Length: 177
Image (cartoon, rainbow, N blue to C red):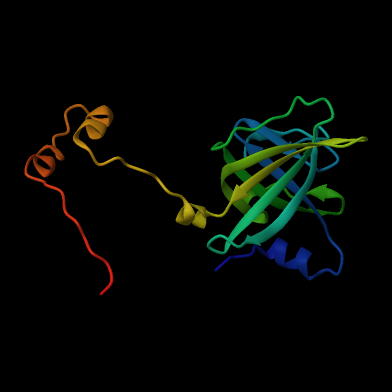
């Protein structure tokens, strides 16, 4: 269960409130707030690149949620690597002042970059970073060749497949009736 601080309860009970995002991808930190801020001893720059943080959307593969971060990239200088760590937080403002304590923030997403894409249109260029939920690895497949030589390439001292292949012979399985 998510515990809300008294300050957050008060802000969220208001009909209108101002919020902003803090995004960290690897060593890159940015915010969509009107100014740069220091949160948890880390500086988040307002460099104008953060375009949107899309709410999680369901993907049909294993019903997992995908998070998309969209960045302005007109100079084609921004990029992120697949597998880089990602953290997205939402924070709030009170009387036009940002609340910068950890207990007054929501951790929206923490995980890794799953894929990236550059979209170039006539008037603008955007860079899309897709992040998957922690359930994303349910549909991933890791192939391990189960031969003596393949395992020796991974770990030369491992002899676990030596005995398996010494006495083995071909087996024909007949399926059906």
